[in-house]
Amino acid sequence: METDRLRDNKIIVILDTNFLLLPGRFNLRIESIEDVVERKCQILIPTNVISELNKIHLTGSDKISKEIALKLSERYEKINLEGPVDRSILEYAKNNKCIVATNDMKLKSDLRKLQTPVIFLKKGTRLALEGYIE
Image (cartoon, rainbow, N blue to C red; front, side, top):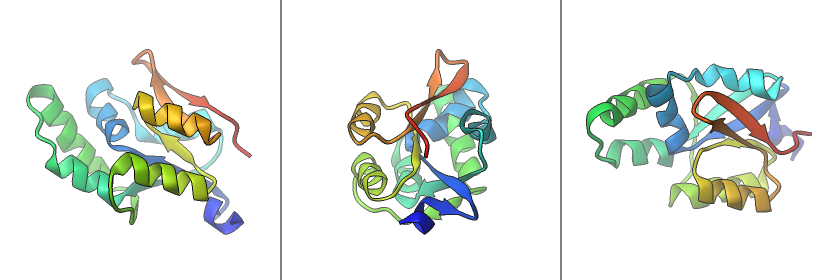
């Protein structure tokens, strides 16, 4: 539905767990997604991503990345998704025109099959967009 895809004329971007960990690992700004997409974006974080972040046990610099991810997640609107994170994001993407931001290889592959655009970190230095945005 058009209103699901665009809210206030913004393209919806769903963040997965490992993408939320990138700012702490690579000094990445989430806002740079708009530079890649070349449009205003509405960043949504699934509630099950937040739950997954809270449950995973990380150490060292990854623990700091997790703390940064949880702090960053407070800035963005949440979307209520339940169940396994990847499956729920795939289901949402299948039913709604959106972009998914992930570095998970399996999820990226599954999203390609659905012809869903994907934003990912390329070579640890910059974001890239794969797929077509209407």
